Each structure stands twice: as structure tokens, then as C-alpha cells.
Image (cartoon, rainbow, N blue to C red):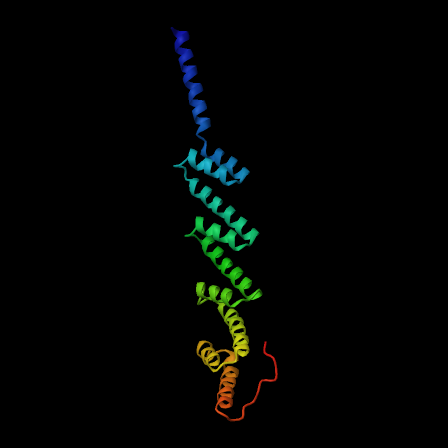
Length: 192
């Protein structure tokens, strides 16, 4: 009987040791940190949902995802990050970086529709001024090609504060004078 009791205590101690080894949040967190993968951190979170280290594991998942988006540097990578992580300091940084990428892309290979889209998405951005200036030049070049009174009027109404607005107003006035039978100055130079 004494041997049976000692055996039972031995089994109980072995079970306690195994269970305590399995329930080592700090050790498991260090293993997840060493691996530094989302899967490892998610496994830690699943195994230790009540651990105070869960917040740190979630933060590292987010930081790794941000680093991937930042290092990839594409619109798609930032949008993917922002879909997953929306309410954090890193999300704010990622949103600003995405905005810069979108403006740079729109200005580097400018089209009217591309510039209008980025300006509609970020109307009050600090990056909006160069995009508006580029858009104004593109539209003005089309107005010159069209060379109608309505095109000049529409341009000056749409872009009253641009460097091309005065030129468009002069061209509009000259075209108006020319059409009314007066003498008008004709554009001899090309516009950029």
C-alpha cells in the first residue's frame, strides 16, 4: 500500500511537472519571438489567451506586417496592411506613406483621371498642390488644343488660382475678339 501511495504521488508530480512545462507563457513567448512569425505569435495567443504578453504578441504581429508593407512599398501592400490594422499609430504612419506613394505615382505618370482620383481621395493633403498644378497644366494643354471659347471659360472657372488661368483668360478674350471680327493675337508658342 505504501508503494502504491508513493507511486501515485510520483505520477501526480510527473503530471504537475508536465502541465507546468506546458503552461510557460514567458518561455513560449520567447520561442515565438525567436521565430518572429505571425503563425508563432498566433499560436502563442491561442495557447495563452489570458497572458499579459498577448498584447505584445499582437503588437509584434502588427509591426511585422507594417515592416513588410513598408519594405515592399506598393499601394497594394499598404492597402493590405490598412485593411487588417486600422486603429493604431502604425496604421496612421502607413496611411501617410500610402498617400505619398499615390501622389508620387499620379504626378510621375500624369493623366487627368489619375490626378483627379488622387485629389478626390486626398483633397486637403500637403501633396495636393503639386498634383493640382500638374492637373492644371494637363487640362490647359487640352484647352489649347480644343481652342474653343467654352473650353477657356471652363478652364478659368475650374482653375482660377493657377498660373495658366491668366493665360487662359487672355486666350479666351483674344478668341472672343477674333470671333467678333476684331484683331486678336494668335498663339505662336507651344505650352507645357
